[in-house]
Amino acid sequence: ETKEIERGYFCMNLAVAGVLLVDEAIDASKGNWPVKFNAALDGLSVAEKMGTQIDWATTLTISRNHKLIASLGIMAGLNELQVDALFTAP
Image (tube, rainbow, N blue to C red):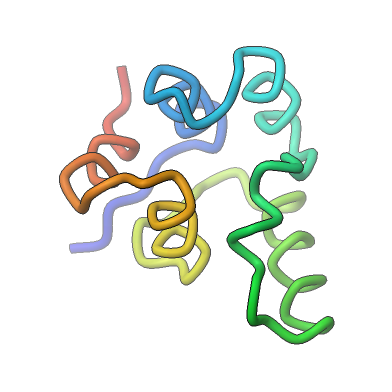
């Protein structure tokens, strides 16, 4: 089973977890790419970086198994349980 959550709830959870500031989470929930996410793009080609950012801007649902999520978890210093908690809707 793939866990999915609406981008807005995911961004709220990122703020609660201390990954994003409140203003950053609000902006990210609108589809804007958070500067803090840039480190999660390390090692990707220009095309992959662009595709990931376009995915973020155009999708309304974030999937737990998206390749960006593993990178974000590492970047934020979150363990697997903490990453799983990002996919819990209030």
